[in-house]
Image (tube, rainbow, N blue to C red; front, side):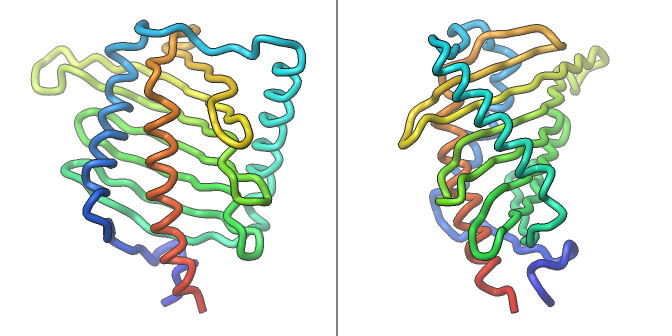
Length: 198
């Protein structure tokens, strides 16, 4: 069966480091609710920086709009009660976007997208998350949050934006590292799945 079939899934990790990275990434998603006021939100710092951010935002929107014309490759991973369905979107042989739908069981869910330049460099990340706490008791609290990161070339965080319940909130200071590490693992899994495509 083709790996590009939406029903074709590949269980991984293959790498022994993946359980640790998955734990770090899921932990970072959960910490986004409890510790969001630890650091200040990054900003553009200049008119040139603001223009660059708008260009990256527009590029991400353009890639998302072209999703239907790209080749999808599917895989999934599980870690404890967390189950994640991952789809990579390819323009020819080049990965341009990763869509990840993560179900964290009683802790909530997250929908994330990673965007890549034609040269294969990660330049933007978008996340929508629903966090739940108090699931073991009768007072379940649900919180909606969003995160957008824009990366400078060749590396580094250009800008980060977080909202919680529709209001601006501070970054944690760990977003860039955890997103980059998780992106590398997803890229590796998708490369393997893509290589099996007929």
